[in-house]
Image (cartoon, rainbow, N blue to C red; front, side, top):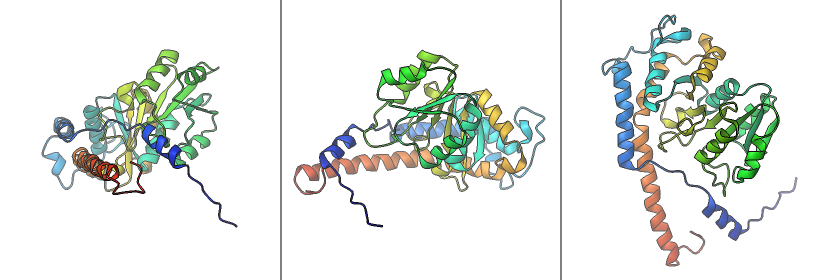
Length: 301
């Protein structure tokens, strides 16, 4: 098969790059405060000693109490409560499969079977696309930059659900998560579930989809230094209860040791990511200065 030639319009590419939204990032001082808030939530829910016990996370609970409902390991339930306390949401459910697993669990629990799913015209992440296709529900790609188009889609017949990817799908995407959620609530109130993929945004930005009014946010802990591929969904009690019901078997549940290791690793994520972002911004200044002085002729900006 002959190789297809790919042509690039440098001017169009430069314009798209410059229009692409850069989500608000935590500064280093803000990240330290965020870290302290997480540690405080862990201390209040788990206690300082239990977090560091080598054997913590091995026991199981039959689910007789509020912290261990659904037959989950008691340690898993405590980690979920610590995360919910930290994020100030109704509840959290840990799931296997990191970011993809959390998105699938959220979609399965949050999208009514007879609903239309409204999503941005930019291509969703490859495993998200597969998860949406497997739901066998109508998909309505809509330009989230066009408020009138989004309003028209929301006013369409029958029940709907809105799926939003927090970080840009493609170069040139600049829609604001808060504005899209606010418009959906204005048009449909609470009858249209709003589900957000917050992967690559969590622990970097101060506010997730659930903080802007969405029903649930899907997050990967694997991207946040967890040693095993686990993630979680944060959201309304209704959606979290459905996820726990869907994943009620022992083999589907995140075990206590993995939950505890992920929580310990998460403590370091906000500051590490803030340092990374600070270095990126510093290097951007240096590169742009070199470009302005003609030192990098093949770099636009």
